[in-house]
Length: 104
Image (cartoon, rainbow, N blue to C red; front, side, top):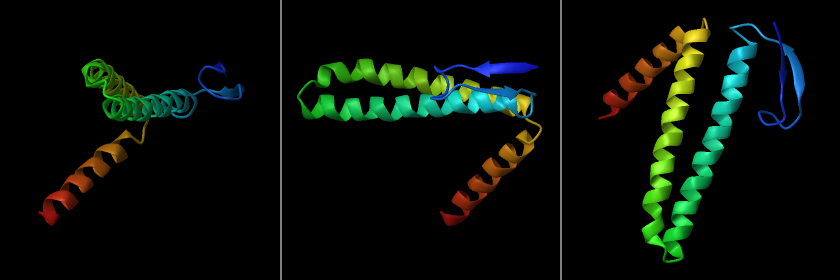
């Protein structure tokens, strides 16, 4: 299957042969990265609103942040379902938890 990646996803449109293991997960990962950029910008907005004395608006931004994080989680789950290396993700999560628990 051939997928044209559009400018809204990437800065430079490119064409790729998409397979569940490579092309589709690459697209989703690019979207996840953009979502992380949005989260960073919203966090910055929260700080700036607070610094400028507009604390009343912060809950609105925090609600949007919750949704963005929810979307990231959903997209990450789809990557795990599509990618044959998803077991490595679960293994990495468990190893990180073991390390953290070992340091307590």
